[in-house]
Every structure is written in C-alpha cells, then in structure tokens.
Image 1 (cartoon, rainbow, N blue to C red):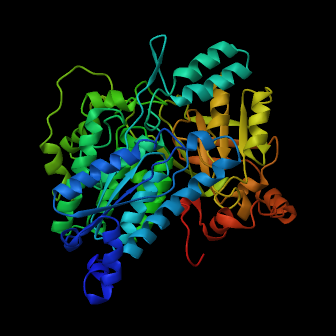
Image 2 (image 1 turned 90 degrees about the vertical axis):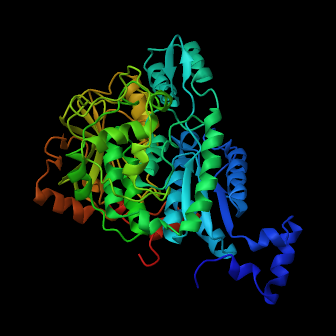
Length: 557
C-alpha cells in the first residue's frame, strides 16, 4: 500500500481515527487536505538543536498557508560536542540510524503524504535525509543553521578552539584563566558548530544534492532570515507534493557526484563520505570510494573554511553562501547541471536565478586560483587498510608521513597518554577497536586530536584509527580504517614500534610488516569481548557493516 493520509482519514471505518484528530483541534476541512509531517530533532541536549521546535512552527505555517495540514513530531539528536571524549560518543553514529528509523516509523504509522525535515547537530542531518530517501515521499530538508562565532581579543572562536585550548593547558602553554575565558565565549548562542565541520558540511551537501532549498544552508540559526528559510521550506514541500516529485527522482548518481564535488570544494568533513555512502544505500545507488576519488581529482578546493582554513559559515553566508560556491563550479562546467531539485527546477535553473554581492572577499577562491588544485577528502588504501581509509587534507601542509606506531586499544588510553606528554614527534598514534562494530559506534577523536594540536604536535605526528574524526579535526589524521580491528583487520595486528607510511599523493597507507609476520600475529589474535551485549549499541554492533560502505545497518547482516 502506498503511503497516503487518505488511508487514515477517509471512509466510515476511519471515524475513530477522525475522532482522535478532532481531539487535537482538527476539523473536517483540515482532514480533507493532505497531511505533511514536520519533523525536527529539537532538544535541550545541544545548542545545535535547542531552537528547532520554534523553527518547526514556521515550517507548519508555510505548509498551512499553502493548503496542506501540518503534523509536527520530533525525534532524538545526540550532541557530538558534549558526547565527545567519553563513552557517550559511542551513541553518536548509532543515533543516525535511530533517527532514520524513527522518522520512517512515524511516517509509516500515520501515513503522512510528505515530509519537512529540520535538523541541527551532526548525525541528525544525514539521519533525516536517509529517512526521506527510504520513505520516498515528497520531502524537503532544512538545516537549523550555524552558530555565530565567539569573539575574544578580536579573534573568531569555535568550540574546536576550546578543545585545542585544553591541549595547550595540559602542555603548560595556557593558564587556567585563559582556558576559562575561551570556554566562556566560544559558543555564544544557538546553532551548530561554526566552521566547515560535519553539520555545516552536510547542510552544504543538502543543497548540492538537491534535497534543500538553494541558499538554505548558510544563514545562521539566530539570523532573522532563518525563520523565512524554514517557512519557505514548508511552502516548498506542499508545492513539491502537488508536483509529486520524490527523493529517488532527485537522488540520482549525478546528484551524488555534485554532492561529492561540494564536499571537496569547501574542505568538508570526512564524515560527509560516510554519510553520502549511507544515503546512497537508501536509494540503491552503487556509490564507492572509487567515485569519491574520481570526483575529488577534478574538483578544486575553493573555500578557505575552518578548521583547516580561516573562516566560519557565517562569513561564507555574507558573500552568497553555498550557491556562491556552486555557481563557480557550474560556470566552469564541473557540476551536473540538469539534476532536478526540490524546487522542481534543475540546479542550473536555481543557481542562474541568484544574484550575489559584488564585495571583495578572500573566502572563496576562483577556479583558476584555488587553494588546492584537487579536493581534500582523500581515500587511502594499502596494507593497513585494504578496504580503505579517509583523511582530510584541508589545512595540512605535509603529504607524506612515516613514523613508528604507538598503539592504544581505546581512545581514553590515547587521550591520557597525550595529556601526560606521552606522544613524541614522529609517532603514529594508532587508536583501534573504535570501529562500527568494535566500539561500537565509531567514536570521533576530536578530544585527542585537538589535544595534540594544542600541544604543538599537530604537524609533527600522525594518527590512524578505525574510528572517526570530528569535522573540526585538523592535522595528518586518518580515520575509517577498514576492515576494523574488531573483525580482525590489519589494524588489529599493529604493535608498538611498527613503521607506518601515509602518502596522500599516492593514496597509500601501509604497515611495514612482512606478510609472514602478519600471519603469525593473526594466528595469535583473539577477538575481544563485546563492549555491549544488550540494548541499542549491541543491536547496532550486530547489524552494522563496514565503514567503507557507510557503516549502515542491514536487516540481514
């Protein structure tokens, strides 16, 4: 049966259903219209999402004004920033699946005809978009907006500066008073982390892939335009329902190519790779690491965005936001221009209607004078990661690093070593058993990477993990190593002192240990006991696949 609100409200047999709707204030006229779900991930867990219930009211108003009946509901969201650095971070990636599942269940149960999805913190964006793709009802995504930067002594700050300040404090380079001053001003209001970290990366991708209105990604959460953007999204969703344009018509292979191009042109988070693979899985598109590399190599890195660069999302917004970047790519023939979007128009038609400020700016380079000739989301393969690994090269000067492994079997052990000055120049910090199954949940290592940067080791060491990195991570940091340690991947066999080479020019990550020695180690290796045997994390560990395929859960793993 096709999802339709008429299944719920029409006919004498549905009189009880109508009675329940009337208990909530609806009348027969409301029930005669099509129903549009307005989902948000608002809560008091994170500044990224705290304002979303209010934004949902604007989306509902847009839906109502266009002649449909809105039905609001919410779902969970995990604050990556607050969950970071401890056991709570294991729930972050798990939440992506739960968000997608919960939205699916709500829509299927109540048979909503279309969907507006409002999201803020990292995993709530891909989780919402995955649900839209899976349900394949007319859907429009809208971002809750970026936080404005904090200011201290004329310098713009983000939450990543606080994490790095902790490292500087541990190294004796920063006083407790200075640390407190940074802490007090870094996050001044509502909105998602300000640099081109994961939330802003996925918001940028939502425009490039066609699921969000053009220009919707960059206005800050506390900018008056944000309310207008969300209202317009409600209107657009009702119109999309009239046109009967569905996500699978929008999420074509060519649209994913545009999204990968956006990821690389703005120096976006490596999490974007994981989430695009997961989204492609929802629409049965065979997207692989090879596609990411092919697109990366023809995409110039244009936007000078934090953490590797100098600017935050609000700065990009002032010069035209994501459409400004996309138009540069379009004008040079790099975008797939005929991809349909939620406006009912092609991405080319959308971009050609924009007018951009003529102000001088240093935020986005020209195609002829890029920051880098090729994109920054690099796929590595080699003896340490046969299925692949990822690294973001934005803001990274070196292209090759060879060093000796210093191995830790969980992030806390690594962070403790960093805090006590246990990491030396030339080390390759290996953090394992943090993969999708092994963690479970692929924890992000921002606390540890930021501590290294704060100690002045950001350009002097490398890190390799089967876990993930925050979009705020900078340095020579390799994540998503697959196969992961928990399933016996080569990273499980690394010993202290082993030599590791990482080369972003040749896309190599190699462990310099003979095959014979690795076979000996493999025979001695034993899978550790699972960290969770009951509950959501245990279910996730049982069902989840490789990071190389998006770390998605399968009904029949």
